[in-house]
Every structure is written in structure tokens, then in C-alpha cells.
Amino acid sequence: MKRSEINKALLEMEAMVRACRFALPPFCHFTPDAWESKGHDYDEIRENMLGWDITDYGLGEFDKIGLSLITIRNGNTKNKEKYPKSYAEKLLYLKEGQYSPMHFHWSKMEDIINRGGGNVLIRVYNALPNEELDKEKEVHVHVDGHTLIVPAGTQVRLCPGESITIDPYLYHDFEVEQGTGPVLLGEVSQCNDDNTDNRFYPSVGRFPSIEEDEPPYRLLCFEYPPADSGSRME
Image (tube, rainbow, N blue to C red):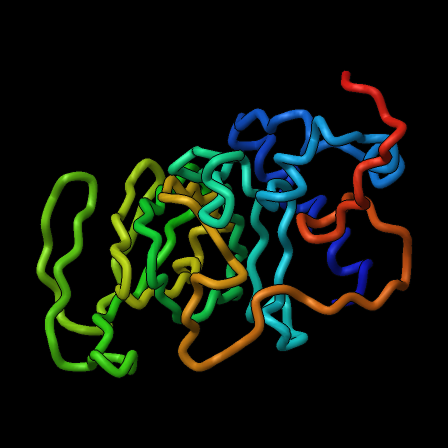
């Protein structure tokens, strides 16, 4: 992705977050220059990949296949002693005409919540033992405490305020219902590891390569500079 595309996506998501009256934690507002002075007291943000996350899944068509996210809190499955949180929380922003590809998580259970805006459609399939899509077996889903049994490939509609539970090995994708407008989603889950716990179908990338055509507005969660050993605790 071009840095200009990423900057535009960041500004669009910020506007949606404000419109939905969701207050972000302070680190989401740090500028790239501010990050240069942040010491080891901010290592939880660096090491658990908190913050902004814009992805085109390596396909170069962000407005068609892409997603904007913020990881607000997260534990660390590889360093539980230092970061014992067993949970994570994200915000996700999806525009009309944009698609987040089919995938499941081997470990993570999550609730996806429509926090505001339009309606989101989440297509669901079970996974076969070989991790292919099960296009025949019906799917058991839980929507706000209501258990539903739906045919494979059903798109579950979530209107604002509604949520769905996504179990491990449950394939799912996202798109906005046409004509309803962009959507701000919440995700409440077990610890998140986007480096190792996403099984895409078909296989795609997770983080973008970046072409620097203008200065960054915000740093993404994998771009933070190392802590300055001379920085003081704030």
C-alpha cells in the first residue's frame, strides 16, 4: 500500500470513531515523532502490537479487499508471565464495497459486535479436518445469546448493537450490506496473535508492504521504533 492510502484510511476510521462517540486511548493519538521519545514504559504497546492496523492483505486493492483496525488491549501468548491478560479488544472499520477475506483462528474465540453505522454481513462455514471449507454441514452460531442453526455459507446480518460469537475453526468473512453505510465493529476475544493465528482461505497476507509516498500520519502496530534507553518513565 502507498503511505498516502494508509493515511487516508486512518483519517476515515478516526472520523467514524468520533461519529460513534467512541473514545480512543491516548496511544492511538501519538504522532511518529512522539514515538521516538517513548521509553520501555510503553513496551506493552510495542510487544503486544497495540494500536493502528491497516491491511490490504497484500493484494493491493484496499478499497475492495481491506480492513482498518485498532487493537486497544491484548495479552501475549508467548510471554504470559510479563503480559498475563487472557483477553483482547479491537475496533474494526469496514466501508461499503470493501471485503475482509474468509478465515478462521486456530486458537482465538471472539465476539464481533456492530458498534454503529450500517449493517455487516458475516458469512460462516465450518472447517473440515483438512481445513478446507465444509460446504455441506450446517453451522451453529450464537447471536446475542440466541442459538441459530444455519446452512453452510449463510451470511448472518448484524445491525447496530448486535453481535456474533466466532469459535475457533469457524470460517468467516465480512462485508457491509449494500446501501446501509460504513460500519464500526468491536471485537472482544481471547489473546490475539495476528502473526500465527489466522488461517485464510485462500491464502493471503496479513500485513501490508508500504510504499513511502508521503510522511506517516500515525505509525502502524508493527512500525514502532525501539525504546530509547535514555527515556524516562512518565
